[in-house]
Length: 300
Image (cartoon, rainbow, N blue to C red; front, top):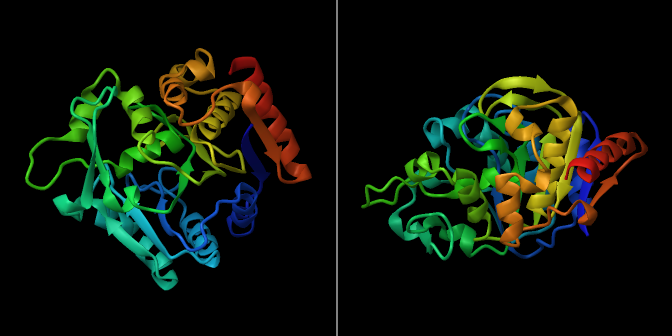
């Protein structure tokens, strides 16, 4: 079963530890990579909420990893400036987290992922720090995406790990991605290249249309957690559908949506509603967990 934990809360500092404990990643003694959502400096739910990042990083540090590194590349603006505006250095500095601005990596800091049956023309590049890590933790937001991704949850969050260019080469991998008719399949294919040990989705608020940097807001008041990127994204889509969303999100079986279908095909996770188990972490969470599960059964 692909477990997706659901917590009804408005308290990130109290809720994230509960969800993280339920997911239960094995990170003690490991070099841990953390990926958040800093595509732009726009406020949550466009970007990771400051308390979410700090609380999650603190939970990781409390589990005695060998090291903790945040890897980020922004698509809208200078990554370093985005991180400064979003108070990332302020929040993570006291915890001793290493913050790596991927735009500033030398060529030797990137590892090539071969094309190998994907829709990428010559493959793509991911940070060597990610590829050699002992564990990966991700936190994502709940958003639609108007530039061809259709939705940006945990699978699409991986785009911020891919090199736009490699020093010494003019080729623009993000240009290739965003101009391709297979953009959503390519997003899924990034995720095959590395495992994830825990995903925390901050769905206290979200964008039900527009996105990724601005849109029509909703306030589900939920935190979701899972080890399965496909399952948590399927649950996120069901949550968006419960509010009414864009045609690209609303139409068709959830398991047939391009990002979900391709990721499941590649073995990244499970899109089968019969295999996705929504687990409420409190009595107050049962209604939302049941509501998401019902949509997955009926529309998954």
